[in-house]
Amino acid sequence: MKNPWIDPDRLPPEEALSLAQFINGRSDIPDQRQAHSTLVDALSPQSGARLLDFGCGTGVIARRLAPLVGETGEVVGADISRVMLDFARSCGGPAHLRYEQSDGAPLPFPDDSFDGAAMARTLMHVDNPHETLVELRRVVRPGGRLAILECDWGTVALDHSDRALTRRILDWRTDTVDGNNWMGRQVVARCLAAGWASADAHVLVTVGRDATTTHFGSIRRAGDLARQNGVITQSEYDSWVGELDSRLTAGLFFASINEYIVVVRRGEDG
Ligand SMILES: C[S@@+](CC[C@H](N)C(=O)[O-])C[C@H]1O[C@@H](n2cnc3c(N)ncnc32)[C@H](O)[C@@H]1O
Image 1 (cartoon, rainbow, N blue to C red):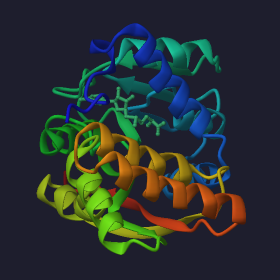
Image 2: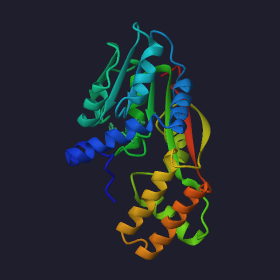
Image 3: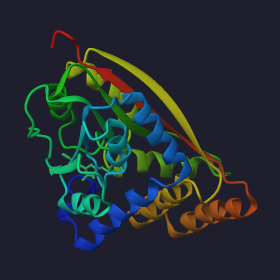
């Protein structure tokens, strides 16, 4: 399946805008706010630091970083998509927060020009993750950090009475929809292969029990896509989604997913 996140500007304008609205709104969901806080804390932003948010989308991480580096610092949000960047700019921010269009190959910044970088839910979508990680290492100064947030759809635990159908839908979704859904478990190895010197990995298990979490919508959408793509029949869909809806109404919906926060460091010797 085509991944819309690879280059949102190639989509019809209303679809690209709805992706922007989706990620911007998602940042207000409590489990996502917590994931973003953990990512920002992992980067330990210092006053006066110059930081990059690569794959910044609508700027949800960049806007959190800007007050922490203060006016003597700078935050640059970079993204392949003009639509995302226009949305980010429309959200405002201080003068030391700016946005630049880049697909990361190469990054339009000199060597060693940032004290650190963040990258949230982007590595799984980029065309060439190895090149992206090598480029990020080039622009982060020796000793600087890169903090990465990625989820891993292979870790979804969903309660449902039809285990076989649930596995079929979730495995298909994991292997087919929206990029490399095993990126969460691959980040450490990929960073080390790209020359980053050391890596710490933390796991954040987010639990969805009602429609206010990110899980319900994305799991239901897996069913919608599986039906649209002929992976399940209409009657399988009706029974699978019907049970999810009933569980939601009865307070019995339960799903969890692992989100990985990986912090890597560039060696002091370059
Ligand atoms: C799922 S969104 C995440 C956005 C943001 N980091 C967040 O957490 O809300 C993925 C972002 O990666 C961007 N993207 C995809 N491929 C890219 C590339 N090669 N270079 C730069 N940005 C890219 C997309 O435009 C999109 O904004």
